[in-house]
Image (tube, rainbow, N blue to C red; front, side, top):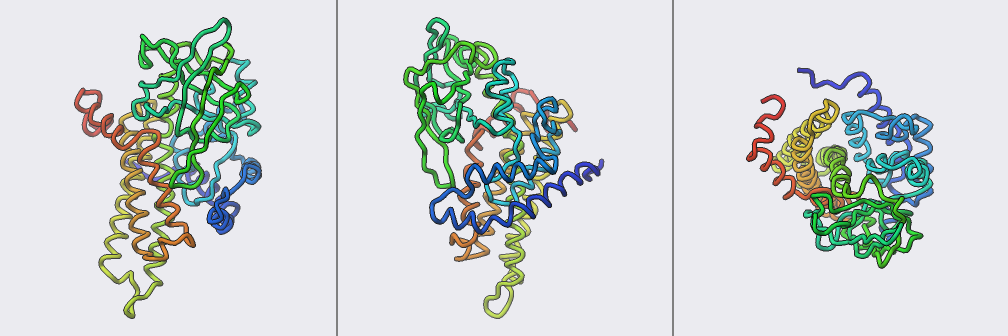
Length: 390
């Protein structure tokens, strides 16, 4: 059993690491300064400039099919790249991406929504969560009522990532309440902001924030249905599922960066005439962090490997998401403790990561939902202890 990266994987990872180190990390001090002044860390044009620089290096559309100008990378490589992105808190992502379910669009919809999104000309958001439907996504209430060649949307979505800046939303709405969302009663719609929905920004403990989307008699043409009528819940779960390995991959990069900060600080900071790294309490925090980081790394890479192997990834991805999200919260907490009062200030990015990673245990599947999935798979015999090696 070989746990080494292939030559290609190592080359891609190292190229991404070099780009992040040279082009993105130098922006960190300015991003912190702006955020302390309650300004966005980077504006859209600055992110766009970085994305175009990365495109010259060949990094464009990591998961996008080659026919649309993307790289169509396997999941393991995508996981490795997301880890490198996690090593900086600068809000940067490679360009050329679109929501995975947009590839279910018709040819006309692709020209109107998919292609402009890939090219960075339009921004999208995915809207399924509602005030009364978070983890229980099947409990959505936003309705879509047929009216001739149109559908009328009424209701509210909330905690929608990117919702305040989006040009259009992928909205999952109830089209047949008797069937229920899980059994074909929900449908996905492509809804331009110009059709009349509005957004309200939600302040959170992290930087940036999601939004509530308000739909009050919004009229949407029938041709803007994404996929088929009744396919909305299935598409929603497909959208959410991708985050199950990208989120903890990002968490691994954060944990690597902050753990190195803790090691550097422990080797230089002196108290009572000695380096704090000589104290057993500090040593144990570093040891526990490294051990948990490595455990998360292999859980997450295995979940990505199951995708590439064509296996059902849900069980492995839930374990990776659950453990990876918890791991990064514990590691950042220890690193803040090691830095003492300085770690608590906004002069260093540690407290920023502390606020950021708390979300990882909530969005795109809470810890509790991951535990439900994992236990249910075992109790119902969907999988065996030991997974594919059982």
